[in-house]
Length: 325
Image (cartoon, rainbow, N blue to C red; front, top):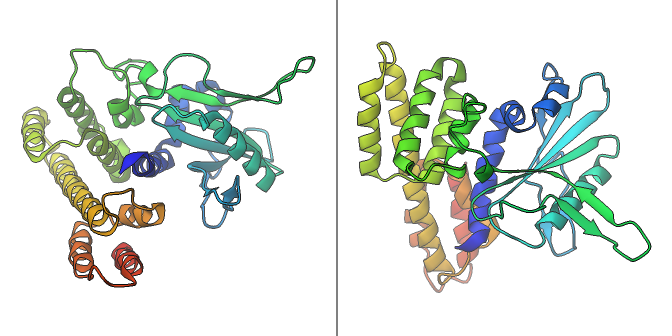
């Protein structure tokens, strides 16, 4: 399905992760700035549908920012907006896109300070100056330069003691630097063990989010999951049995939903779009169905649509919409 689908999945994962772990992310990678935020005041995740107008960089290219938070800095009355973009591969227009989004956000919120952050991983280049956009360059005049805050996860070792105590790192570990001797299985077991040990202060939502992130980027099969659960059971402490059961049930359910979601995407791609990329609107609907039983029902419904139906795509999207309710 190409990079369009991959980006949609990354956007959803990082939005949900930062919603729960914003403070920890800033503690890990921007500790001085984190200290300036007044965390006793309400932090708001701005909604694409209501708080953020659609950002029309060009009339035919409507897009949404990945994530936008409203926070307050200490001793400042005006609000501050934190704009996040994630990027998994090299793209010439990425720096310009961050600049344009920053400009448009400031235009929509003229009374707020706006800071842009990029979270980079996978094949996005790790070296060189990547966090700036230069424009209006001409001899005799200073260049116009926009600089944003960038973290490339591969430049940080997931076991580094200075950051590994932060639970958000247990989620991000699949995308971070690893020693050549470390494989997916070892990292997955280690991170899940930390989740079990810290479940008391993490709480269900954060524990489930870390588990979801690990499953999404490692995608262990059923045999690997069974092996992991058996190994973790050998190391749990007395009193942690209930927590272990909860974690095991959660990761098994997440894995089943992931498998059914992949089946649904594949069925739609080849049945309705001849193997070509699925339009973003339809992809958004697919990604919004997070219940395994609803996924199964939708698969049955869409396969009942006749190939010669003149409203085939409209009916497809209708069935998908029902699955999100």
